[in-house]
Length: 118
Image (cartoon, rainbow, N blue to C red; front, side, top):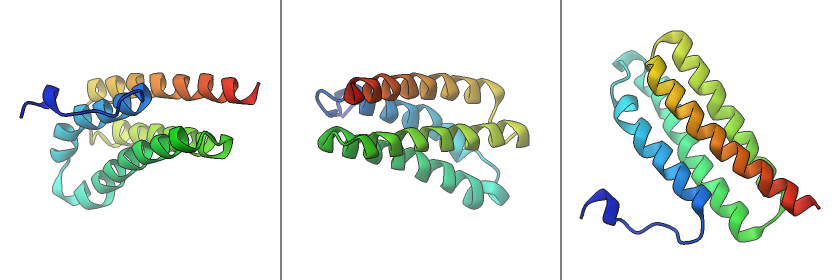
């Protein structure tokens, strides 16, 4: 089965974006040096999957608190990416691309939060 043929969550564009972010970073996370693979790479990968989980939880419950938790997770991943750039664990281009995708997810969360609060 090709990656394009894998079924996605219907109606959850934000979750699809999070999944694309995970898939785009995965090859680069795998190349992180061994001495940092467990400490940093696992933390980053776990944080990315946690974001997908929090987005699904927020979408199914439509609770403000869960949307805020998803936003917090986006900020945490941004911090991890900044750390990767500073320590040269990931390339500048990869960090820039991932940050751009993450910013889009953050903007979607922001508009979602505004829509729910009004």
